[in-house]
Amino acid sequence: MKEMGGSKGQNMCLIAGRASVFQDGLRVGGEKNVKERDQNQRRPLISVNVNPNIMGATLYSNVVNKGKDVTCDKNSVLAHRPSTRLAEQVVSYKQLQHFPEETKKPITLAKDCTIIDAEDCDEVDDDNNVGVPMCVRHTEAFLDEIDRMDVDEMEDFEDRIIDIDGRDSQNPLAVAEYVDDICAYYRKSEISSCVSPDYMDNQTDINEKMRAILIDWLIEVHYKFELMDETLFLTINIIDRFLEKQSVVRKKLQLVGITAMLLACKYEEVSVPIVEDFVLISDKAYTRKEVLDMEKLMMNTLQFNMSVPTPYVFMRRFLKAAQSDKKLEILSFFNIELCLVEFEMLKFPPSLLAAAAIYTAQCSLYQFKEWTKTSRWHTNYSEDQLLECSKLMVTLHQKAGKGKLTGVYRKYCTSKFGYAAKTEPAQFLLDN
Image (cartoon, rainbow, N blue to C red; front, side, top):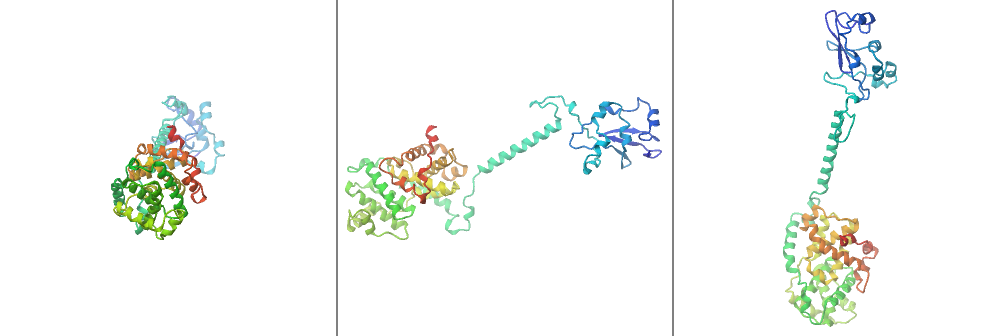
């Protein structure tokens, strides 16, 4: 046996965090010395709670003597087994020999460290966790709290207002420094560009159905001439503003339509179709002189006011706020072009039509309501404010391929527009 400690010092052997003190001259594991000790002075090892499952704690005992750690041999451990219960709790030395090499390294436990046996944890918490140490339960609660924090932060991240103009700060064509002022001006002036939703009452020879037939035909003409989107929206705006102020007979209604498109092309297009193109597209129902005379009349009636905010300018801004892809963009334009044909949609301002078209397209694609905080911020419309207009758009989408006015439907049933007209309508908006 190897003597441990000096003649005047004290030797302390820690077994699983509990210290047993031996006086001077005693040998660890010596049978003679052990028998001579007073049984009342010896602390039985049965009082030591050992759980070999506690986070990989090593069952080697450490002897601390003046700052030096000396590992006890196997006899010193096995000699202090007074009962079979301890034999069940303590892993034998032979079993320790089968552990991997890295697990045999002794670990010195802190002085205030106590290994808790699962048998001592009899109390039941709110979740009926029987026999679970308090430290484990606290750790689980802490991890759950971290998970909840991650979810909340993710929700905040997904629903925060995004700077949609940050990436265009170096692009002079995006005018990122002035775009907010431009949009504010559009919102302020859109009221002056709107027409009365009942102006058709002042017309004596035309009605709403004739207007719908004209616009449905002009959408096909616009598509055939491959004109820009801005041209179509400005054409419809010119027609409505002119008809609100000027009475027209039905024979001249088509002339008003082609002249309005000629004016819009001069304002928006780079390569403008000539007058003869519009005469030809109307099957020569009008002469060149009639087109030019109508052009003068319309410009004087509108007082040369061509710079008006149409739904198109709001569509581009709101699609950027919605972080749209090509599919969402095409479906949004499909919704709003359906509205151009319908006279009853004139009661909505252009900005509301644009926002509702995007909202309806999102509902159709995702089949659930989608309206982010960024979209609310840039459109100034809440989801509730869009529902009335959006439900009407769903109804128009359902009957788009039926009846005689199918110009928009056939246009968006082509591969160029991704067959957007065949997208399933957001029926759940009407059900709600």
